[in-house]
Length: 161
Image (cartoon, rainbow, N blue to C red; front, side, top):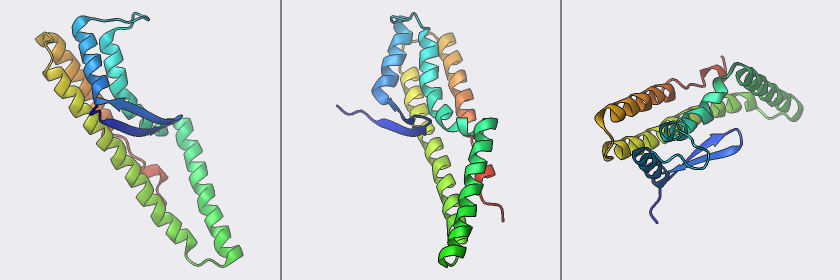
């Protein structure tokens, strides 16, 4: 089975969405399949795509952001203690360099993962037999989720020099 899986970090570890899952969800929209819980198939589709953005965007929540800033500043302080106690030169500078690279890596991964899932979703929608009005609405909502993905940033966590 040739299934492409996206991996994004989330609060509980990892969030996955497969290309085959996207196709299945679009199929549910076409057939208006509501499953056991009678959920709107369009909402289920958009929630699955939005989960990728959400798994990174939670870091922009006010409480999470404050907690992350405390964690990051505590780690920086610990690096200073490591320099002073153990005589490790430039540990803080090395850590600061690592932080910038790490957060840049997280950001590019989140945006790349969304771009891949978004492309799969758009392709599945455009290859479906959905009526034009429904297709236009879903593509518009998919674009709104895409815009959220490109507003994610971790600048507030970068070391301030």
